[in-house]
Image (cartoon, rainbow over all chains, first blue to last red; front, side, top):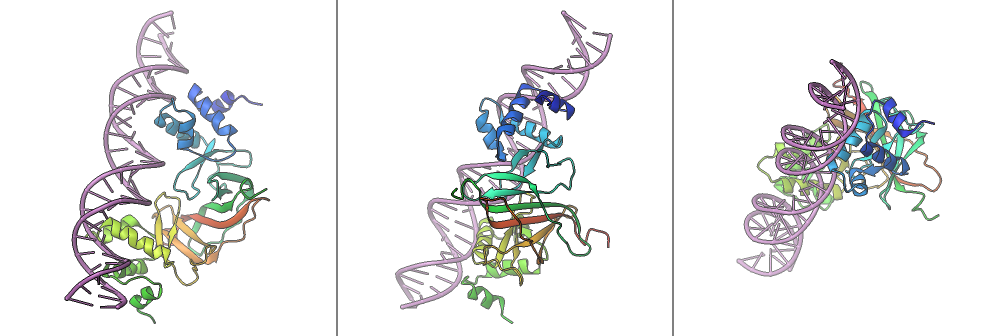
Length: 138
Length: 138
DNA sequence: ACAATAATGCACTTCCATTGCATTGATATT
DNA sequence: AATATCAATGCAATGGAAGTGCATTATTGT
């Protein structure tokens, strides 16, 4: 059981108060968040700092970026089952058209996709849209 | 063999010189195009006109929008095998990381994706990224 | 030919992403 | 412990794409 500090250090990320806070914020969220979400949670901090912190996390593969089709980039912590260091890691994301939230379905791997001759597949982005469990009534 | 004029009329779209030009432009393209692409091709015309023309085409289901993950919306004509009137039509798109072009692979249907209990799947966006046939060497 | 309606063009606005630069803070070296 | 070095933060500004309101022009139907 590592502390967050040790974890960040193991990823070659300098530990700062800001980074710890943002990490904790991401960790307690069950859904992918936008920069604005983070901004609202930390209104004393500057947008740029938050932006760059998330970028740093992304470069060090502790956060991955999600394009769920809303036009706004979202971010989520990489979890067990989400090997973002590996370029070809493929898990799917679910975007709820009702509450507008996006979640990672890391246990759902993307099936092999066949592409025509001459095409080389390196990466796949798969977003399923619909209604999430919270909104679907039960 | 319908003329473009007849085709547009059959879709309840008024025929104008601008719309014919834009339609022809889209038709001769083998790849999805951005608004900027269209803008560059028609620099005498106003951005807004181009924007609204494409929107109209989209509403009338003769063009579909593609989110290939570049952050810029692309558009492509719906072709045989692409039933965009049907909300749930699912064909995949291929984005080349080399030439940055995106093509529709209409003959490649998206496999059924399983989602956890409580989640309702309505729509799927699947983009395969890699190297296209033109860039892959042969 | 004319009235009604739709298409086009212009000027803005908004929102998100991104960068340059100065400043503050942390780390390492002596 | 003081200082030099380098990274993190904050501020200001920019750029790009998407979208809207309104006036003007074109098209359609009567």
